[in-house]
Length: 85
Image (cartoon, rainbow, N blue to C red; front, side, top):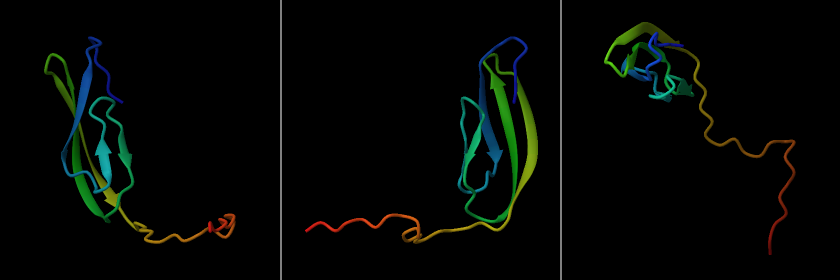
């Protein structure tokens, strides 16, 4: 979490590559989503205040064992739906 000593509003951006399926919220800086492709992704997150001052954090994401569900079907505990006629 970033903060500004002058209590200015911060905006966030990701430079480099976020893993596919992830996105950054430019207002909160939260990175959310579900990664969809295994690999190593180098990312720099930048926080910028309203005066143009910046702070950065650089790191690498390592995504392994992604799971793709193409047809989950019906859960064995799901009630059957009555057919309409």
